[in-house]
Length: 310
Ligand SMILES: C[S@@+](CC[C@H](N)C(=O)[O-])C[C@H]1O[C@@H](n2cnc3c(N)ncnc32)[C@H](O)[C@@H]1O
Image 1 (tube, rainbow, N blue to C red):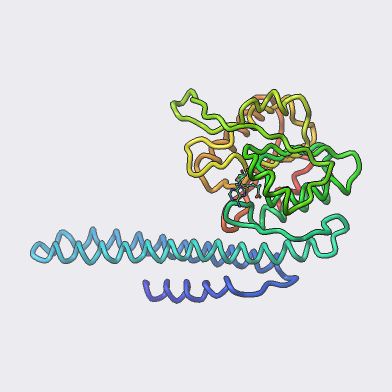
Image 2: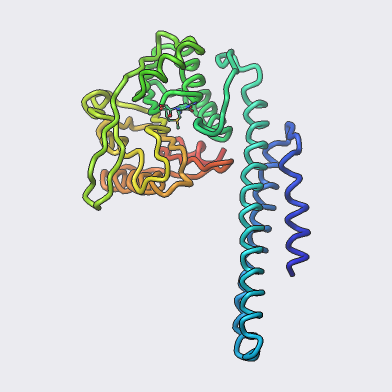
């Protein structure tokens, strides 16, 4: 079983380096399928180890210590292979998304400066891809973006090219604003609001990092696209909760919300809270998750549900 599993994983890993072309969507589905199969193999192997432990331990009184040690070592080896496989799976998906993004934006009539550096602090390729499709096809007219950076390069070019589009970016770090602006000519159609960060105590006993004066600064307008990638969430129990101030009154009837780092618990809780707030306000919606190196979460009004199946 272990041999079969490792052979399957080894077959899967090379997907990472493959250059994806115009069949990128097919490759992404294949990468996802292979990833699921490897993870299923990993789970099966784990259960088999647990069963083996239950069967062996009662019999081997004298050899108990040795059997336990061998099983523990095997279990940790299986877990390590699982971790590497998960990580390789994400890298494979990210590289396929990169190709999909490039194919999609090639010869774009509004994304003329395609210099972008996704990943690490910034959004990844799946985020950029979803953002581009949303801008290009849903044509939002009032955009709020939380966290200035690589995603802004895409959103700002759309706002500059389209007519009558409001684009506001909230950013906490004045130094980052000048560094960013020194390398990317922020169009006059993009307004950057500099808001300090503040830590607030929540009813559940947790704290959260928030933009100070958020609702007063941006809560008056109505938005049909909200892009959330700030403030940095970094493994907090609750993260990026500012958007909750805007639901429902600042959400347009036709809307899309995109939240990055949905693989982290703090952002996941925020997505759940968004759904709860939408439900409480009787606002119908569709949601989905896209995965690359990290996950992003998307919520849309029902008429824009197409953007949950890109
Ligand atoms: C998760 S980042 C993402 C910002 C943006 N959406 C992007 O795609 O780059 C959130 C915050 O990190 C800070 N930041 C962005 N790029 C950074 C970098 N290269 N190094 C350090 N901090 C950065 C900014 O203050 C930003 O608001």
